[in-house]
Length: 128
Picture 1: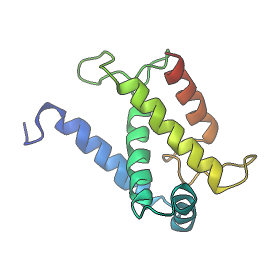
Picture 2: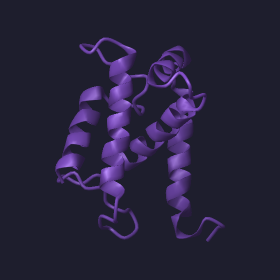
Picture 3: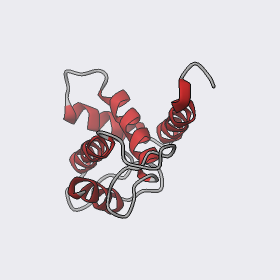
């Protein structure tokens, strides 16, 4: 076990997902998105990349009822589901603000995920 403890694999998985997501980012759309979200924050882009990695990782741990299931304990733990729902909502808002509401931007979403997939997933999490 490394210095991160029992969650080391989980954290490393989120880091890999985040790194992959940042490589797939269309920088001009992310910069436009970050300026529309908060022009006073120079960290908006970095937050969005981090959130995208987290959502991309935990999307795969969502059960059919919308709960985020801990991959080690095999059950929902504390605030994982509401945190996921909030993070997904942030990405959905950003994707909608980058482009027209009829054609939301996919560059902000995790790789291989559509706006509709994330919206459905976020709604399930909110309802669970």
